[in-house]
Image 1 (cartoon, rainbow, N blue to C red):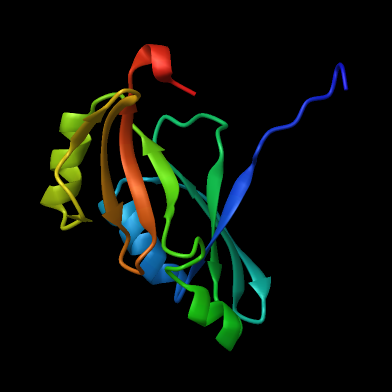
Image 2: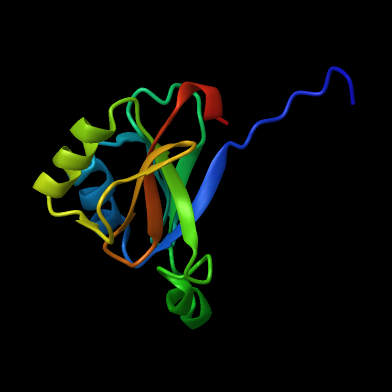
Length: 138
């Protein structure tokens, strides 16, 4: 496999409505809107990524198109933390997120790998806000 180049480009996140998801991820969290392209039939290709993420992995905001998909909104990982938002300044981002109404499930914890707190998006997806210690960074 020498010379092989791969990267994780997108993670699909089921949402009930594109515009509600954009209002949260772009409007409240300050993510960058990468694409919002009509695909016909009301379907859109909507991608967002945290600011300063460069060409890193982005979220594909996927509007649920069936009852089964709608039932999975907010529970794509069976209740586990699903996504990890890495920051270079935990204190700054934790305060900014709380200021716009993001609800954290716990107070910040200091772990061997860094500082972390679990929060949920408006649909129930569990996230970690995490600042890794440089030696423990993935």
